Length: 379
Image 1: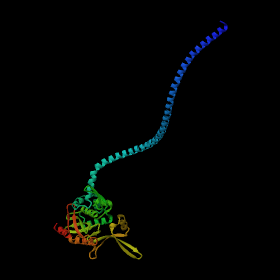
Image 2 (image 1 turned 90 degrees about the vertical axis):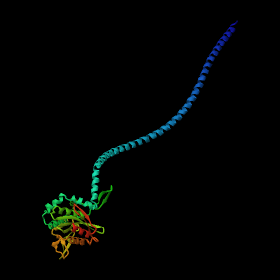
Image 3 (image 1 turned 60 degrees about the vertical axis):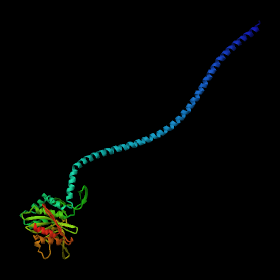
Image 4 (image 1 turned 45 degrees about the vertical axis):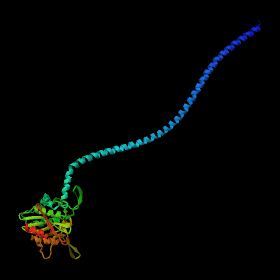
């Protein structure tokens, strides 16, 4: 065998070995390739899955982002609403504290009212007795008409006593009324009747109330005269409240009795025994002097005091020419005294007649003046 053959054989062997090694390497590489290929497909499948998941996540993220933007907007609105509610809450809390305090005050006042309500109700019921006073309640009203204020005027200012002549007592009392008080209509007063609260412009004032007001209407002034004279009555003297009516109108005066003779004192009417009491003023105009007669009760006390102290006016008794001035405070027979008084009121009333007489012990009503005169004669 030659060298060439050996060389060829060697090369062939080397190539065979290289081929076998290459086949072995190929198988190894092929196996690794297949493994990598399979892993690639697995990874690709996972990638596709992840990509799909990513797309879904992106879509969800977008949705969440939009929802988040909406939530942020809602949150902002809620913050604003919360601030408004907080301010409203603070205001409500403040108002609640105020209401709580007011409620406490109301509870306190309610308790006070509960205590005072019976007294108020009783007072309103008592007022109802003095509004359009029922005749049977007049004696009770007159029993209350004896305040210290009246006695102070009668005893100290007028210096009257029981032994003072009746004519002087009547004159001083009536003139004091005319010069110190004025005629005043009643105010509207609330009163309770059948558990209803109503109001009416008629009220029987007690003497102290009339004095504090500085005046009153006919029954107020009559009750004051009654009380002042009653404080200085002596044996043989009586005093009464008397009422006349005529076609819906009524008027109240006082009857002063002395041993079956009578004097009628009518302060609101400015009347005593057929004499009208007036405030006479002298006025000069150029060379002529004029006289003016005023109703004393139409002028306030201060005005009357100024006019009289300045010499501009004086109190006079205007009587019919047939009657002497000195007879103004004369006691007359019942028929004469009543007739003169009713005649005095005929210009104001249609067919006036005596309808009631009372004092603090009794009250009597009449349908006619004659019935009154008959009763006076019998009693």
